[in-house]
Length: 134
Ligand SMILES: C[C@H](C(=O)O)C(=O)SCCNC(=O)CCNC(=O)[C@H](O)C(C)(C)COP(=O)(O)OP(=O)(O)OC[C@H]1O[C@@H](n2cnc3c(N)ncnc32)[C@H](O)[C@@H]1OP(=O)(O)O
Ligand SMILES: [Co+2]
Image (cartoon, rainbow, N blue to C red; front, side, top):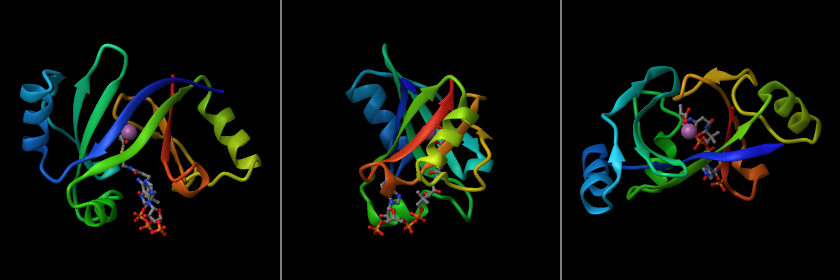
């Protein structure tokens, strides 16, 4: 069911520092920061030849990543995102198998203007999983 690895997301305490690290030290192509209010994050996209890295920082008062940053003040890998061909079919199959789909269970439009869903980290080996419609 899951296809390509779309991105790995890293929560960072300081986006400017993290962007400089990826651009100047690691030599990657990085975007400007983009605020995504419906998701409670600001994101910098790092484009690699075979996938993407997203550098995330909390946006707004009720960010879903605020708790993670509190527990991991130096930052850390926050989630991995897999592509699926049919996100509603994937959701229904996962729910039938007992996986917890986060939020209200309805896909939101994600950072790449495609529908996304999140699966509880405790159901997937301690890793928060994002699914994105391919
Ligand atoms: C838009 C863009 C895109 O790419 O399209 C994005 O990705 S937006 C990315 C930001 N959006 C999201 O992350 C949305 C989905 N996430 C969420 O709803 C929430 O972050 C959440 C429910 C996973 C966790 O929320 P929280 O940290 O406030 O909750 P808790 O503190 O109660 O956490 C419950 C348990 O899960 C653990 N836990 C929390 N977050 C993570 C994580 N990222 N990876 C692994 N474990 C995690 C906690 O340590 C705790 O474990 P223990 O009990 O053992 O201490
Ligand atoms: Co993501």
